[in-house]
Image 1 (tube, rainbow, N blue to C red):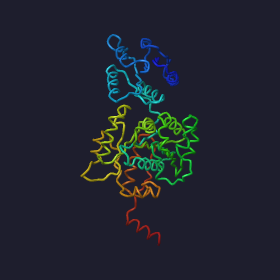
Image 2 (cartoon, rainbow, N blue to C red):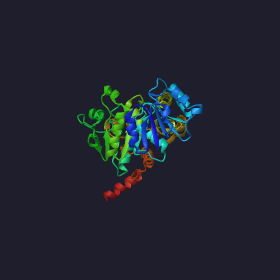
Image 3 (cartoon, rainbow, N blue to C red):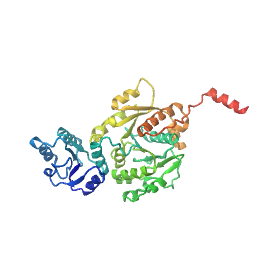
Length: 392
């Protein structure tokens, strides 16, 4: 299978060639030079979308079995992207959206051509918030802790957002346990998997990487940095849980969301959270070619009452499948910050059961064994009888 690349990007040519799926990958100077290729990848830096549209119209329509990709660079607005995408779709041309790394571009091409090939990031689950204060960090942590407890695997929790994320861990200020402590080596592409492993906090089988503490440095993180970090994490951890926060406007969040197809949206029954997500979806998600059905929905801080949205109603409004409804713990969240531990340590049976439901779903998606070690909390009568027997 021959691939013609209408682009001056020799690094992309090498990356495509290194996949081993093509007999040859050649750089073509014009669209006319691509006619003998089964796959054509075109950059809008070399060919304007109007030129592309005219070339593949009428008598010059592409060959029946030829697959054509059009790489779109950064656009000024979402409507322009939608228009170009619609034009390409009408001519059976596959668009590749902006803000993708080179490896992600290659992945998209390979998965389109060979859909039977599984994703290479099957062991990564990303948690993203519909709004601030919906509990994304806590939800990611309790799921990571429970997966670490109920599997024989090394589980990592990476806080890849604009907050440190370690509100519920006991750490010392002087400890070098965050992404800020390895950013220089990460930016220069010299960070090793072993260095990443030893930077993480280790607590009972869970490995945690603290997010950025410096607000001024957040803008320096780009999706490419996150991709490199995640690939290193895959070398040393079996399961990776990512807390992507809620701010889609950062390179951290974009890189995190791009890292896996296992995505969870954390929200609450609040109308403000739903409206904020709708705004984000219409203005940003569509430009990134992300759809609502790419996510599973977690209704967090859930209150079972008929006066507000039920879990099913929320799932319908968000156009997502419902993964679980994690109950509201009232003031326990504030207490958890003081105690520096997550909510699963407060032995609330209903809360832990719902978290476990989500964890079993993650395990099924990742195709890993879940040992189901969570034991039901003993009732008051059993505890009294048990204490008497121990005293006999």
